Image (tube, rainbow, N blue to C red; front, side, top):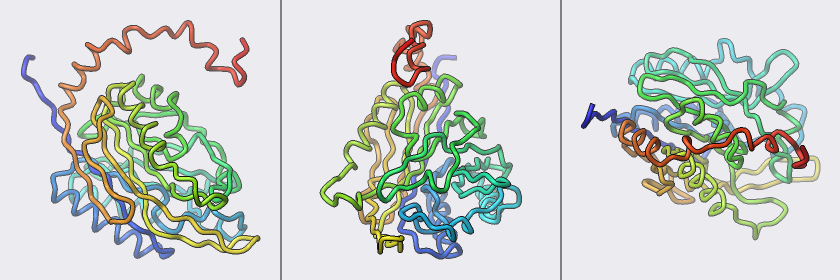
Length: 297
């Protein structure tokens, strides 16, 4: 067993979205192909990449952007692409499920098989990020997916601020964490810049769980008409990949389209995780307080 290695190359994409589905999906496909040309095995596309981040406004007509999971055209296209290239692709989409709506992601394996979906658990509600108007809280629970190259945990944007989500996925065997994202400026306070905080929180998840982490965010300025006039967000990109101690191994800037790649030896990381003791020394019997809202048992 000594000297065994299991190498995987992960990729994070970053691009500006228009509000045209076909052009955005074409851009995603072009960048997936570029990632494949760089050796990537698992390629992460940003959150809700089919169009603008519409949650700046509460508009009834935006529910028309949702589509059922079954026979979703973008998922079907990415299945064909994944099979052609032999890569794993998590595909973010706005899901309609009868009278429910979810911020969801389908995990496509390297042979084109759809491994199932995760529905976003934590739904934000604030100026510019009014997701509770559109999305029901996810009902899948935190999941891991056994792909050809690794067992992966995938959560979505606001989920990335919660250490419980990262720990839940790694407890189930996730070897790499993936977070597609749409985050940028704050319409109510143009002086508020969360990018460093955003990155440090996820670096902490990687280090605390001793796993690599991949985050993909969009770039560009998007203006949405709201009931109070136009709302604008400038998405700050800064997509990145960390190693298992939270160290940044690849990063993008806040303006440029990017295809990040990084290679990891999963068996070497597994040995490091086992020897570090953070899972050996857990005390679940003392964590019941985490099941409460106010800390009272």
